[in-house]
Image (cartoon, rainbow, N blue to C red; front, top):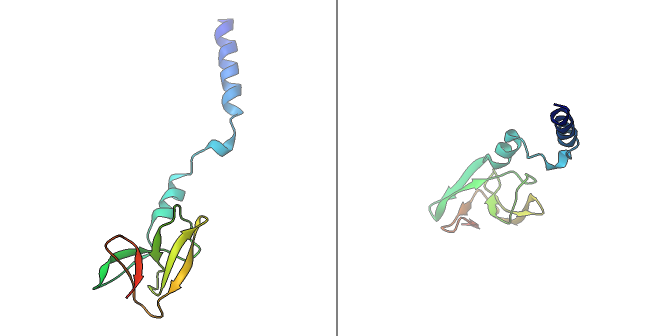
Length: 101
């Protein structure tokens, strides 16, 4: 019985000392980052998901901003403007990239 109590106490101490950094992001954080803001598209390409400039992202994907006027790319974890279309004509192409019509 003493061994069981000692083992339980040690296990509880180890569990409580685990670093919080290892915790996975909450479901709300994951959903927020993956929720599209809008959709842009045209006759020249398939609709493409739009995300806000400065919004968090991962990888190096391209998208359009919600106004469909700028092409943005994921860079260092946030979407940044890489080209301005000069009008509401940012569209997706068959590869899922963003183009100006």
